[in-house]
Amino acid sequence: MDVPRDQIISLIDQGLFTSAEMLGCFLVSSSSVNAETGPHLKAENLVLLGDALFRQREYRRSIHAYKQALQYHRVNPKQSSASIRNSLSASNRSSSPNSFHVSAINENEVKFKIASCLCSLNDGKTAIAELEGIPSKARNLQMNLLMGKLYRNSRHNRASALCYKECLRNCPYIFEAIIALAELGASAKDIISLFPQTPNRSNRSSCDHFDSTRWLQRYVEAQCCISCNDYKGGLEIFIELLQRFPNNIHLLLEVAKVEAIIGKNDEAIMNFEKARSIDPYVVTYMDEYAMLLKKKSDNTKLGKLVHDLLNIDPTRPEVFVALSVLWERKDEKAALSYAEKSIRIDERHVPGYIMKGNLSLSMGRLEASVIAFRVAQELRPDLRTYQGLVRSYLAYSKIKEALYAAREAMKAMPHSARALKLVGDVHASNPSGREKAKKFYESALRLEPSYLGAALALAELHVLEGRNGDAVSLLERYLKDWADDSLHVKLAQVFAATNMLQEALSHYQAALRINPQNEAARKGLDRLEKQMKGVDPDAPEDDEENEVEEADGDPEETELI
Image 1 (cartoon, rainbow, N blue to C red):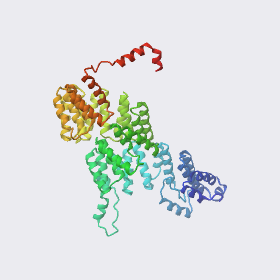
Image 2: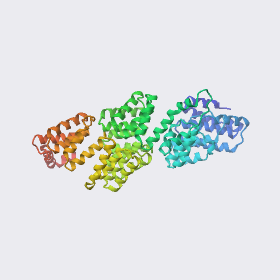
Image 3: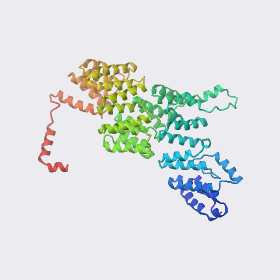
Image 4: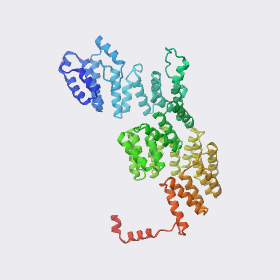
């Protein structure tokens, strides 16, 4: 043979893909291959060329090489006994495009490689068709996992669940399959029952084996709790697992994500920062962390986070959501384009849809905000998607739809104070519904007495109905446990409305000490200081009048500005 075939395998193993591709071109065009060995060796050479092209991300060329290989393979389906032995040996190896030591072509493996290329080209439909051409009994772990993902992306949830179950029957440590099945509605008991029972070959008792795998079963239970919106139950199990596996990056991120969803912002920030201190290059869930930093108005940390993420991997959807968060105050259109970019990278990336929904709502694009939150809810219904839907419908003046979404949240999370508060918010939007709103807020506080959001909402109702004293006494109960700027702003507003200006001043200043970027506190303090000086806070300022006069006097200058 003119070209040493083993050399292309060696080049690929060493990551020298450009040279491997060039050598592959010589290999497949060698006249001695055609004359001496026939189609089956030509097919093997084309697979090697396809593998080199795949590793260079030349997916269409890779597909072309793989399909040519299949054509040559089918010309001479009968292999020599040596080829059969080699094929059997190869079938025990990985079938991914990253596995290259294949001595004889395996048609099912080549189909899988074609499907992998199609996935990289975002052609999921054709990829599914390619994988469906592989007999179910011939599909290995990688094939079933890819099929599960593709079926789920195309909303064929039943078929997706079957593929994920097959994965767990082969190996219980396929975490993607565990999480996907939990999100698809499988119970913890059903998922655990899929785990293969390993024979007890050592002297260890079955009790010891149970203890060694108990952590995995608890992990399954935690994911099922989260998927059923039992955030408290899931959080408790994750924290229990962290005691056994301290400083586990994955568990820290899962805990932080759940804490972010349920509004435990300070705890979530602490756990995200702990995860970053252990692994400063982690990208997973960092967009959730960015959103929390934005809520805290910690622009310095937010800017540094985005800078770090861009240096780590600028192709991840989390990076573009973090960019969207950073740009929200500067340029909403740019922020929206970043959120949409994250969705184009990964159409199942929920934070991208949440960010798009929030931005669309802020920009008055109400229909777009509803659509974004609905998609997020279909992918992974959590408290934030319900909250976004309710706010969007209320902005749309669609009270009926808002109430339906809030009741959906309450049905999905029957023991959630935040879901109760959401129903109260809808009733509070209408003066005739305030009494009902009051009952829901009070129920939320009975369920979770420390829930500041419900307390603030109830205090607002008290103010609207002239019960300022009740509002103050309610809010002051939270002062010793909460260093929260919104709490101080609300108290300042109530005191200002009852002409207790010194108390109002004290609380506005406290709010700005906690969060110097709080716009409501800034405006409220400015207004209050005018009142205390005896100036009408609603009167236009002299500077503003002068600016108007100057603008009127010189229209050409105005145009230039």
